[in-house]
Length: 113
Length: 222
Image 1 (cartoon, each protein chain N blue to C red):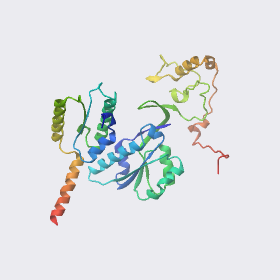
Image 2: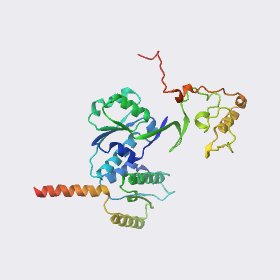
Image 3: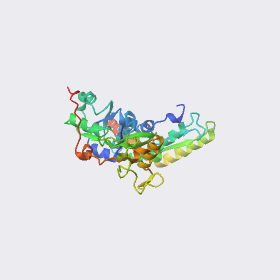
């Protein structure tokens, strides 16, 4: 997408619904959005979605927003590692855990046949 | 418009905890404008409920629909052919729409997803404020377009109380004193003399305290 301003709550929710253990939104540095306030809107939508995820028990800490300059590859890599470590430490999301359980049950049923 | 906000998710989940298949019905009018119950909000609620149920190992099939309005029979009629297949409907309309749907579809439980709050305006994106309480006897013509019934904490009719301080209400320093607003507006209109005209004792029978209200226009009835 051209700007994190296009990110909406439903996009973030659907990522978790499909089994994502963690989601991070990376926008331009604050004050440097090409569309002026897109990354600020994304920040607020991320905060709102974090609260929703807490309400349903998936966990808002699995969703984060970072602001990185488009040219700052090293920082992007650093954030990717940071988010990866954090989410691995938390383990699979409750949705992913249930998907894995269902898959395991289905596999056992197939093997049983 | 009517302004509402979504109920806490655990309350909504409580309504439908034993359901297997539900319809979430949004409304394209007021609750879309106040970002509480329109098509977007229906999608978000559907996603949230699916995840809440799924993580507990429970299946919940959800159909999403957004009607033009839920306060007119013609629009509610649009779901007649499909509604019977659901265990319940979660309506994201205001309380008016929830009730009208429940009156029409007697055999399906209709649950409210919103708490309906007031008739108001969008002061700025993300901020909605009360402006009208439907008292049935509008005096806005005398008060320069500012309503002392909905905007004055004490519903005073003839000027501010002693608690009005620097244009703010004594109950909340962030709340403008309605009568200060009225006086300022009358001054701007060059009508400050209207302030001296006493507003007589109000007939409250046209307000909700007079009982549920109804308007009949015989010229429009079929």
